[in-house]
Amino acid sequence: LRRSGESPALAAEIPDARKPGGTRASIESDRAIVLSPVQIPGRPVILAVRSVAETRAAVRRDVSSQTAALALIFLALIAALWTWLEVALNRRIRRLVDAAARFAVDDLEARARLGGNDELALAGRAFDAMADSVAQTRMRLLESEERVRLLLDSTAEGLCGLDLSGRITFCNPAALRLLHVAHPGQLLGSAFYDLLRLPGSEQTLDKAWVDLALQTRARVEQELSLPCPDGTVLAVHHSGGPVLLQGVLVGRVVTLTDLTGKKRAEEELRKSQAQLRMADRLATVGTLSAGVAHEINNPLAYTLANLGYVAERLRELPGTPDCAEVVTAVEEATEGAERVRRIVKDMKTLSRVDDETIGAVDVERALDASVNMALHELRHKATVMKDYAGVGFARANEGRLVQVFLNLLVNAAQAIATTQPDHNEVRIATCLDAEGRVAVEISDTGAGIPEDVLPRIFDPFFTTKPLGVGTGLGLSICHSLITAVGGHIEVASKVGVGTRFLIILPSVAQEPAGAAVRPAA
Ligand SMILES: Nc1ncnc2c1ncn2[C@@H]1O[C@H](COP(=O)(O)OP(=O)(O)OP(=O)(O)O)[C@@H](O)[C@H]1O
Ligand SMILES: [Mg+2]
Image (cartoon, helix red, strand yellow):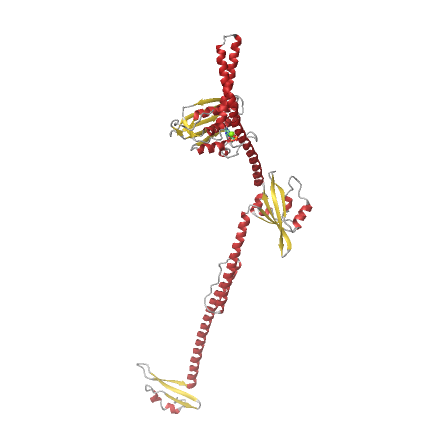
């Protein structure tokens, strides 16, 4: 400073400036100079000389670098905030968009569920509310569709929708079954009326008929036939109605009902009515035979008495050859009349309609009476074997019991096709079972009963015999008569071997005094 002659005033102050805190400054000719002591321990104090311009520049430099740093920090903060905002916003928008996309492809559970109170959250909540409402409507729609589908699926009638040209646009499972088609695709688009015929005809339906059936606004009811792939023909009831959309005919809906069951029921009803008429005739015959038996009984009584008298008187006459012939003739006549008496007695037993008394019945005597009556049926078919154990009395009605045995014996005879009595056998056996009840077994070596028929033989009107031969009432009557007295009836059968009926009756230890059994004739 001294040498350069610069700031001579300041130069003079150098010694003072060396003292601690002795900073000095001067401004000369627009230059400012500052002297500041710099003390380094162990060293002489030196002076730092700095012009104010430099100092200012240094300060300016410091300030601008601080400003730059602040600006950088600010920018970094802005960038971080922006990034955060961007990420958060994007994520929420993506949630909303995702929910909308999932909902659009039938995910009815899809919701945005955005939190917050900003516009996006509001939009999200609005979307969720709309989705709730759409989902509810959709569920109701699905439920109602399901109900309709269930109805259509479970209806027994085949249901088809047709367009105006008669092509199938819809069909329910019953229609598929009826038309023998496995999948709706095989039916859709095909001409419905090509599948049907008029009853008894093999030709396709008349075009005029089909046109009318398609175009009329009235319902078309008609019995038609449906040819099946197996060659059979099904009778069906066709009912076709118009489908109107705001008054305009847009198609038809037709139902097809299988009439097989109805026809079978009608046939069975017809058969049952015929059988009822037959049963009625049989009842009349039974009543008549009771009257006839009664009428025969009186003349028979004096015929037998007179024959006895004649035989007795003849025995008193002197024996001549002529007389011997007459005696033989009278004996034969007596034997014949005796047979008539037995038959009449058995007939009366069977047709004793007025007597429904339950009492002690001699089972083996009732069996004998039944055999006598069935003999004309049995004689040519089989050898009748009796194996009685002396079972005594059972609790029953005699007439009804004879009726039961008679039906079983006639059934046995009818089950034997051949007329070779030596080769077939009808066996009648009695015994007491372990519980002391009377057991009667009537078995034959006839055709036997097939397994699928066996469960039905006790059904009223069930018969495998031609109309006029059997009414199908025999076994059902047997069943009800036997169960009515507390017994039961069982059957065992094998086709080609034979059939065995077992009847169990409550026994009566001994014939009670004044038992209900009346003399049969
Ligand atoms: N012993 C038998 N052997 C083979 N089949 C039998 C025998 N008994 C009964 N059945 C079968 O059971 C069916 C029913 O017998 P059920 O006695 O009830 O009627 P039905 O003999 O046909 O007629 P109905 O007795 O009224 O004249 C018979 O049609 C026959 O098919
Ligand atoms: Mg019978």
